[in-house]
Length: 108
Length: 124
Image 1: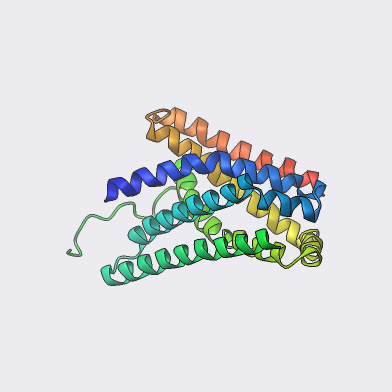
Image 2: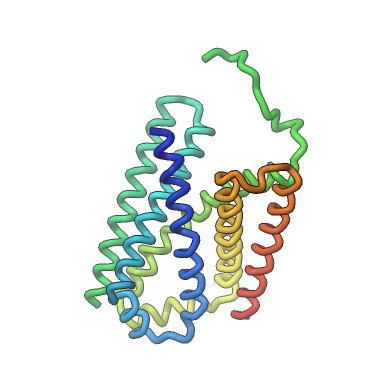
């Protein structure tokens, strides 16, 4: 259980390194792109795959990180369990909302 | 679970060192980035509203106060990204001794500050 947490946290970190470098590069270059360019990029197969994979790995990484912090700083076992569950639910919802928003962009 | 377990580190009398400050900073920047991740669905939603809203978003992003927040966010991201790479090297067993961890620590600070300044200047 905890060894899986450790492995997934590292694996997601390694995936996020190139993904975030690309995101920074894209955002720096954003002023050179028109609205239609952005829509075209986000609607392309690679664009959709990028956003889906990036947001999945990112919210996973975020969820595991917040879980570790709650384990360390919330000492009451009951509250700890509550906040970890709450955090996981919020992360899943955020991922699903991202998928819906991406669907709206592709349809725009 | 009794109350007489040994407590360490004693934060009131603990002397902060580069390594410990970078360690807690990794957690703090991680939490900030978790909050900033809300921007992913939010920006997609604004883009889906159409060209006028996207234009409005660009106008808002051009405001000086927003630019300062963006520069701070960029530093948060680059710091966590570079320090994360440092952690991955540690996990593979590289750079674990005290001298190396100080060198890599200073490199993380240097590069995250430099990248933030260079990219921020491009938009001033």
